[in-house]
Length: 147
Image 1: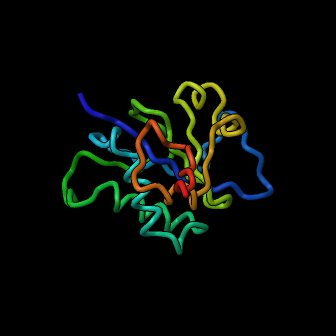
Image 2: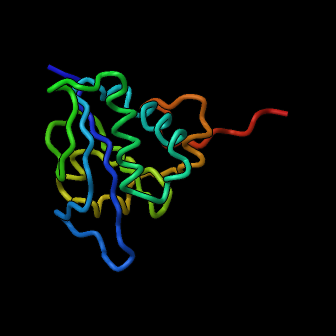
């Protein structure tokens, strides 16, 4: 049992084209966090705004946000270079583009990070502008307030 989900930080050098099966990424795993990942990412991006283009710092900020006050345990969270357990779409942070993409596990299994070409995306700026993020409003920009 669990509520398994992954936040993925994908740094893509401009000279490298994504290929099927390529794994130039860090996977941050939460065993009980899947449902809450959209909001965890929003709060992590908000807190780490000055590190949006720095993948290594952004990964650490996201992991801290994922773990929260549950530090020190031997279970519940993990860091990997590939996908392991998962029950939700992958939330892929792209520091170079300052954007978040959503890809299904099936698309990732079949196409690797090439699935990003067809994935819905949203800028970090638009993502953090929402007062709350859920799986239902994940890649929707906040609409302007009525006048």
